[in-house]
Image (spheres, rainbow, N blue to C red):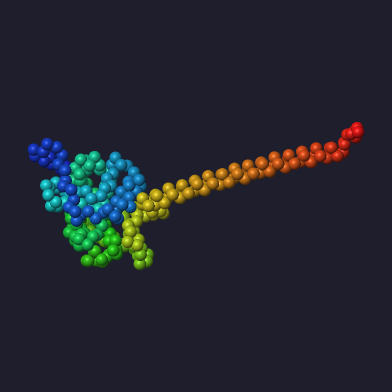
Amino acid sequence: MTTKPFAPAPDAPDAPGIIQFAPPPPDEMTAFFKVNFPGYPNSLADHFGSPETTIITSEIAAALLLTPDWEGVRYPDLLIAFNVDPAAGLARNGYLIPEQGKPPDFVLEIASERTGYRDETVKRQDYAGMGVPEYWRFDPTGGRFYRVHRTHIAGDRLVDGEYQPITIHRTDAEHYWGHSDALNLDLCWENGELRWYDPAAQRYLPTFDDERAARLAESNRADAERAARLAESNRADAERAARIAAEARVRQLEAQLRRQQNPGPPETP
């Protein structure tokens, strides 16, 4: 989708350098267990590549204006933006939309008891006002924190300046998913966990646990191969030893047979 252009951010008067956003308030920090701890920023970064033009980050400010307080500033639990300047975001400690020239392509909020209602209402309005093409929400409780719609997972797509709900599919009571056009990935609610599925590759993006399990499986496979090679070497050694013993026995029997056939002169008394 095409978004309207944003004018460059004005320089702050009398500023000795780049003015940074304030850190997030404590009740906005809900991403750790469902986004950061599983390792999704790293997994998504590996998936999309292009680190020089892609921002994938958690709990940094996003705003249309730079304000000295938290007014008008949101701290999404996950923000993804393509064809932008990561260095500028790092220096600013946040995503200033006029400075980047476009809104983030995707934001996600993880519900908590304190933030769930704002995720569905105020933040939804704010992200639409920022021009964010897709806004997603995830409730690990399966809807207890989302008091308005009681949804497990929800997504909105910006159409003519207003959010329209993205279709959420239900596989069974423990599996829900919807498709993100912005990322070309499926976002999944699975037994209270957030998963990302790549429909093109037909695989889930790996978590840290998946990578550890893969490394363990690879280590076990390597150990099994080493054990098989050792067993094969021991078997070959055993066959070689048996062959040597058999050859020695044959030589012994042949010598004995020759003595019997050629006893030699009798001993003189």
